[in-house]
Amino acid sequence: MPRPSLTPIDTARTLLTEESAQVHAERAAFETFAERVHALDPLLAPAQKPLTIPSLRDRSLASTGET
View (cartoon, rainbow, N blue to C red):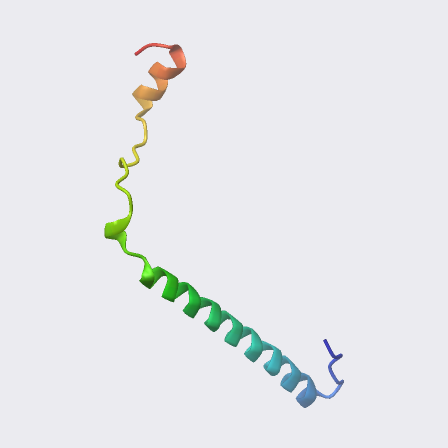
């Protein structure tokens, strides 16, 4: 990375160029991500058992070895 000039305008231009490049890179990454998500078909995903969280009672019984 070139060292910014000591003049405020040159420094601002350098920072603006760097920021602009970063924004373009982030936009391209987001567009790629959005295309991949759009291409997913949730109806083709394998059926899965819904996730459940054990209740406090279930956790207590499990820790004591009771069922």
